[in-house]
Image (cartoon, rainbow, N blue to C red; front, top):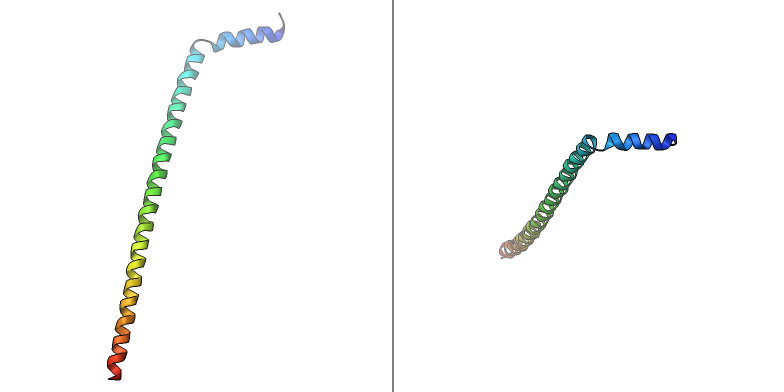
Length: 86
């Protein structure tokens, strides 16, 4: 038996059992943690996209309101100018 074969056999023997079980448990916890992180990240992304849509809609509404006020102000200025000429 070569040195490599002896080392490999010793490594496999020490790996199996408790060390392997600990690794599997930790790896399982790691996978669960990553899945939770991804889920929370996707939820946050969705919430941000919803906020963006809501604020874009609000901006459009406020811009329309501002434009209407500008039209009203122009109309009032015209009426005042006409009244001053009389």
